[in-house]
Length: 512
Figure 1 (tube, helix red, strand yellow):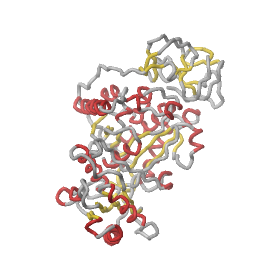
Figure 2 (cartoon, rainbow, N blue to C red):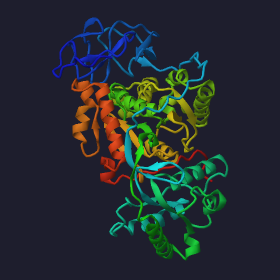
Figure 3 (tube, rainbow, N blue to C red):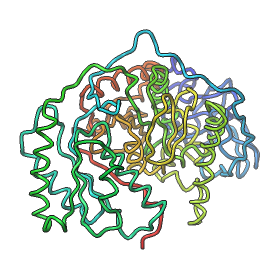
Figure 4 (cartoon, rainbow, N blue to C red):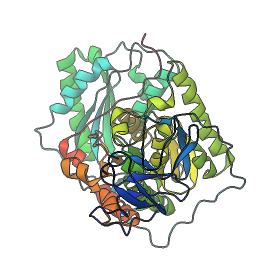
């Protein structure tokens, strides 16, 4: 797609964007009134009704049952006759699940060799070979019953002077850990909390239980401990109550602080970055500006031997065939499709479908259904080969572009990425999502300039400049890449400055 020649003032030539030669729709760059002449995609037409910014306008007549194309891909069928110049949205576009004839890789895609000149950042080297971009003490609740105590412990350090190398004492309260089925659900919670306790951004940790819950702290101690040092386990009941537990935990954390006080950032290769790729509050511009620009940065990191991780299984549905074609080998492709099929069965238990995913805000921003949303969402991962596919909260161990099976619900998705070891997360948004994570910097990338200006306290980068014609996708992609390196070295993101601490493990089973 060519956005270089788009001018700021709306004209018949620049008021809509034609994304692919095969598309029979264009996307309104600005609000387009009824009766406006447009010259786009080699077609001249007059709009039959008002087209909101980010929404679709038909470039030619589309009959009932005829396919509608965006990004050169199918996004649904006309539910009635659609005329050239007409607004296309939920009122005339019908959603249908698409069956794909998957094109599996026939040869193994090799990993790229490391570059001669490797970019670097300043990070905290860990004994397991990973690198932290932050240095926190974590107080992790084993269950909801210990959540309040964990908060009290962390809050008690807010006014204290900590060693210069420590970013803070951070609590991880949540609503799980008891009243849950023992099996896949409890296993997943234990994997998630273990990933947080052993995260490279965590210098030391306390795991706090009540004492009688399903999720016993013994799961995190002993020979199977998630970290080999600097981990303390305790319970409220065994300590003599909430205030006694707080006092004991404070003494233990002071000992931990003494152990880590001398840690310093050192220069490390950019290949030590594990980058989460996430989106929330998406709009139609997300797939035109912010997501493709993030895809450029993702590809740049993958070429260095770093890891990037696309999440949200619900938001690749309808685009999974594109990821299958990019898979490193057939095994990786089949793992990916296995997660999609598993998620379908999960939704069917509750009578749901993937098309329940787009929110009212997504639709107001121009996204009609999950097919259209997913095609824009996968752009966050650029064009690099898919090197691995992992389940929720599993540790990322393979360099290059990875996929993680998570819901599309933002706090749950970010929690899975964090537990998998992402030491930075990038988050694109069109409507304006405000989210972060307790111990991981989250870089917010706005898809459009009006929202960026409206929410400057939350947004780090304005990819809306692409649609404005002021920057290219590649230029913003490089801007994102450079900011990733700066943030990895300690620069604070807007979410960090605002104190965002969202942490929500994925509960997949029943409440007992």
